[in-house]
Image (cartoon, rainbow, N blue to C red; front, side, top):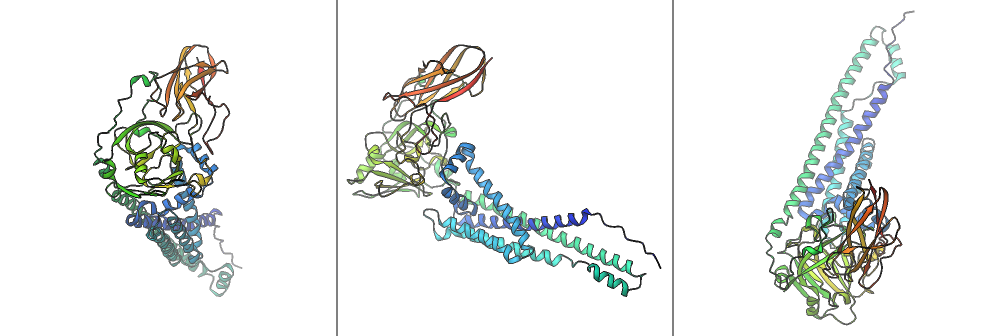
Length: 557
């Protein structure tokens, strides 16, 4: 009996590594198809508008469907980065689904393609669900779905065509060995194995090249489409061309006495670049003022349509005003003071002829946002504006260019419609605006608030006299007093800066005499001009604004 040498067994890890490589390759096919799909969607959005791009459409619909507590958690946790986090989550979810679609496509091609078709359908539904959507808005998502499905099918077919058939099974190989002279078996098996390996290597390279090329083409299309869309709808030149008229009612420059000279304290007037932004827009509406018009309708005797040039010809007036967001936590950053320039909103409404029984003014944004303001407050003598400028320059796009509403006394969600295109005079019984439908307080009156800005939280300060300073606001009521206490001791009156009026915050300072070494807690509270003291009890922003005393902890060394 002749003994034949037994071939050395392949390392046990080789089959596992091959399976992992095949799995990763299939997942890469799905990811490449997804990138191609998004690229096609971005290119198609060039013809329709940025908000119709698949990810933007899905993200906007997700914002509308997100429960209010989850929205508040996102704002509280991520601040002004909440939109970037949302988009990142959408891209990550898409990547995972695309990888699964790739695994499915190499086994059941039509099923894998169906995943991309479903994504396109979801995007189309999301685009059409937006206020004011047109049939064309679903085109980018449908294009993305078709391209994704076609790409997945093509890459999966290429993979199957270039993958060699496996060597005969063990039983078949043993039968072949019995029927073949012993001296020929090893040579023939080696040759067959070499041929399969060479074919497999060539096939893998082909699929890898095609997948990488798809990635590159999709990424180029996506970036190129986004750049082209941004350029097409860019309004920078139109904004720069706006020539603001001299106000009919100019205000003097803010006096220096409004701002205590304490290093680290916020400026009295917030620069435009630092003014907070909280809204639901994933992509900023871009409106050319030459195409803009404001429609005033509803319960009025004389519906009107006002162009931007006509608005600028109105007697414009300036308004110094502190605007705050209802989502602001106690001591939070979502508040700012600016000098607005605009036309008197009450005068425009009276010209339209408000009918008896109307009690709500609903502003509609170009992106469909609706904000409702008590009509009696707009007409009670406060200086409500249709603003066209802030701090001496045309409104930045992020803050509502070319026109927004400003009504003192209310949080932004019931008074400040950015990218304003429509004003409807109606009733609270007839219509619930966007935030009211989500459970927020219908009125949105600003609560009395105060915060400590100096020293910063957990700051280390030298023993001795320590400057404490901050801001307080009770919009349209005014701030009458601010008190500070340390470590739960007696309240001490802070020094108030000059009073610029009830619609503005008031800055304050306090000299903490002889601060001893150790860790200390400083608290602040304000009293409004009506004599109401800021409540101690903490309440979350939802549904009517946060309450409670702000505090900070410092270490005196």
